[in-house]
Length: 175
Image: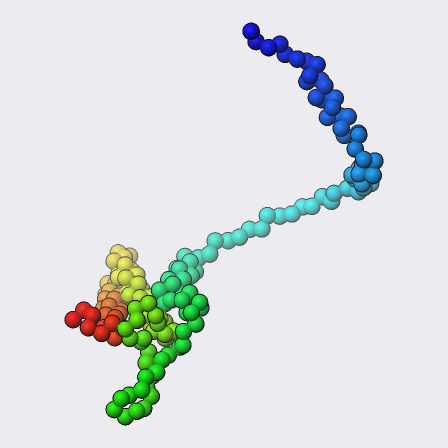
């Protein structure tokens, strides 16, 4: 058997809500009602600010800068605070000479080592972008050839230098 709808209980709840509004503390009632009897919220005519989208070159530059900072170990440099460049003593002459790469330690680096490696990675990435631009059909042939030569050169230089950096970092690697 379905329960009967209790109209008294619904009316009692509404009456309790109405009576609870008037049964509040008189001081609270004065603070809640009186200021709004003569104060009025201002009519603001605010315009939504229009933000123009940044250009594609701006986004590319920010992504490239972020990529450079990530691959060069910027976070590592900030946290560990390694020296900018190291030094070692020449056993034959006893003279102190600078060392750019921290040899033998894969998980450590000098600041210049990270920046130079990051630059080589960015150079390789720019070379790939130039190779992509060389494939554009709307460009003149001489421009396409220039982009292709610059792209191939950048990728080859980045590869050779990164391989050299690894060989300096880890003696006997890739031999």
